[in-house]
Image 1 (tube, rainbow, N blue to C red):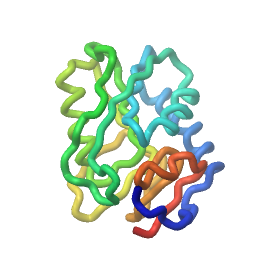
Image 2 (tube, helix red, strand yellow):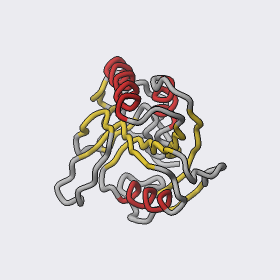
Image 3 (tube, rainbow, N blue to C red):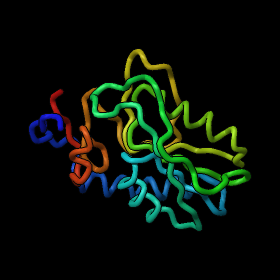
Length: 176
């Protein structure tokens, strides 16, 4: 097992996250046409964010999950996205909200959008708790964003470092 990094520096408090997630739920509900929604969470990082977010969206919905891996235990992306868990139900004709923990290079989100579009949903919208604005990353639109994030390795509220720190109630940064 890799060495455990030092305790993360808190960047976004649990209270700030709770307030923003509640607001995001209302924004999503107002912005999307009425009717049922299929919320697709990207495992494992988005599971805590998604659980809070779906409770903040006042409409009928189903929940699905996609597992992906591009980091492994490293702190930089391998550049290759691998599906580790696929959807259990079809999304053809459904309105889909794809929920990510963090968008930085956009590689994973682009891959997942292509994958999901090929399955014939009525529409796909995207939501990310965090978005990093990296100078060399190609532009990518995320429909709903919780917070703009610094260019640091972030953990907590579902995000991990070698599978650690997911349980922190806040988002923090660790030195890599």
